[in-house]
Image (spheres, rainbow, N blue to C red):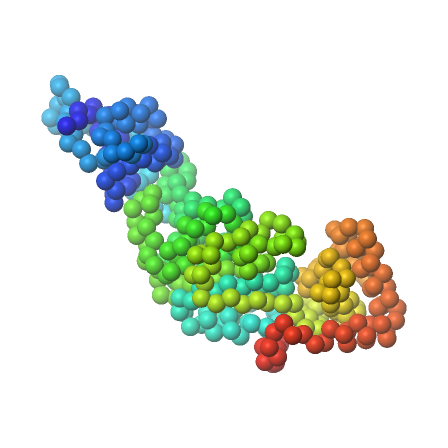
Length: 397
């Protein structure tokens, strides 16, 4: 039997409210909760000395609480600290309502590749976790966003970094309007809204992403810090994008790409591996961007596409270590609309590469721009693409 002071009783009550489904609590959980809610750390230490020990660093919250002598029998009036703790535990809300929305349709977007398949999955409103892998700048994220826009489906985009943890995904305590409240994270918001959860650059995360194991199974999630159980609303689904398929990158192009736990990857139902678009599709994309930025040079569009496709073919053959993505071609078009100078636009947009690569890219473009036969030859060599079945390309743009 434990004799607790009113202050210790007050602190214990805060813990039992914060962890309603637990009979025990660890020392770390108590100190973390105290730090998040502003609870006096000395009060926590005092309580620890009077709680029954279950094992090393683990204490029982089920105890017979007897007031110390001379303590009045009537209920003890709560102190400001206790009231603040109860408010922190009792208030659960979002710090932002802008994370869940239906994306706007982009008039420059061209439907190609796996867009039709992704659209069918999204329109089905079935829980069907999908993993989309592919090299940088080939439109993975844009494809998912525009599929949601076409289906009028809400989505939530979460950008993953090595520092992303459970607090960022599920939620945590935040200071809002002078009060400490539990703010729901983007994963919980997507579940409650029945939205598409887009986990972008999922191979950039650490093992902390394992907190999403249950989410990837379509099961309810227990918010440990509040005790609330969140059930996924109908229509909720998870789509992950990455530059790799979760086994890391031996070539060193994506140095921060991590090896994803096999158990985590197994929870994605299917994996789509998206290549860069074929020349005909890429022409349409670049032309749309040319119109978007008010530029008018159809010849430049043809030459840019031939140049980009030739570089990618050389990359696949092992001739160069860098690649010009579809996204970079769009950047060149935007730069061209500002300076109205083809070569300057290309130079500025390939300056990020090392000197040898940069010079090689510029030299290749000079040959294509000055020699129609060279352009036709470059474009002809890359017309055949075996990375995707032919039926995925037909009538998609």
